[in-house]
Length: 68
Image 1 (cartoon, one colour):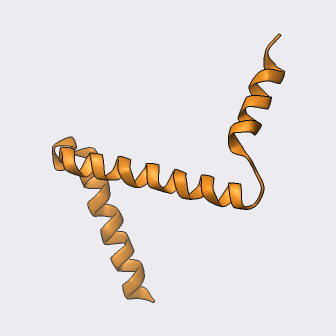
Image 2: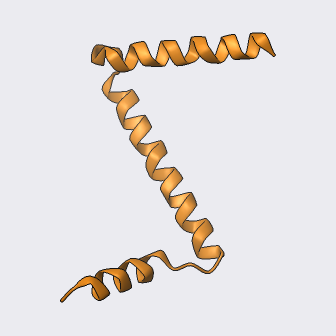
């Protein structure tokens, strides 16, 4: 267990150093992260739709009800 915690801490430290140094990220890495984020949003949206929550209608209703 100790080794897993150390590995996680090393990974976090490495990611933090990359975050601090913007030269550590290339354009391809940034685009890849953006694509993964969009993919996650699509999966979450699909899961909500399967569960019966229509996100677009809910957002539209909230916007419509907030207008004067």
